[in-house]
Image (cartoon, rainbow, N blue to C red; front, side, top):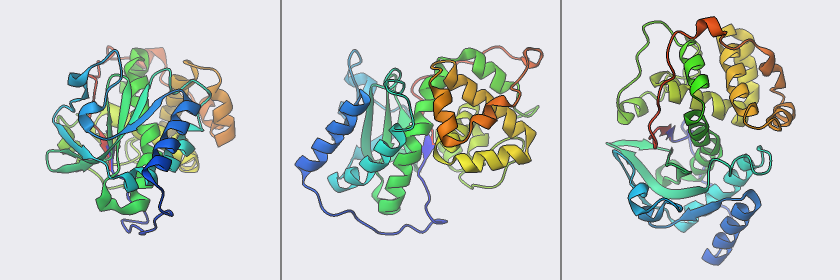
Length: 285
């Protein structure tokens, strides 16, 4: 799950796009969906599912969501379109059939920016963070939540990632606990943030949102820390082994240099592949 995004060190600039009609917003969501082979929906969170799944699959374990305001949906759409454009045609839709937009997303008393289901992701358009925060949450959340859908299908990558975590490290057990760790901090023990250090999945998610949403930051961190470089290489391997066209994406983003770093070697695979339940509930806002 994704934490809600902070903008400008916690200051949210209250800029609104020119008002658009509900019909215009619906048409834009439909157009972005068609262009990417998926459905973009909003409305009652109880409707957040796609066939062959049913209404019971829309429930968010240990979480709750409110319906998004149409003006907040409008703020998120451009950011979603921007982030989806990073991926080769059909790559994203092969694992994610829909992107749903809710209003506020809570786990306990903690605000989150997103979560995911068996074949979709949910992004929050939380009005409390303002328009810039909504846009940034959507921009990063497209990458963050999707990476969980990919990681679930890569048990070898899970095991190799586990081998790169610090000895004696233990994950947080509950999503609300993880969401309290929201300080950006610096790289420590190969984690890019205190939130990323809360679980293997959150660590992988944080690397994904940084690689595709802030590539220059990952390049700089990898240059300064060999462990970050190895994790970055493993992340890129996970995507490229599903579709070789991702290597073109790496070149466009300037992160192809990270793919040459050495991931975990077979001798380092000290653990069996872990099982990540679906859905998980971790995306800080």
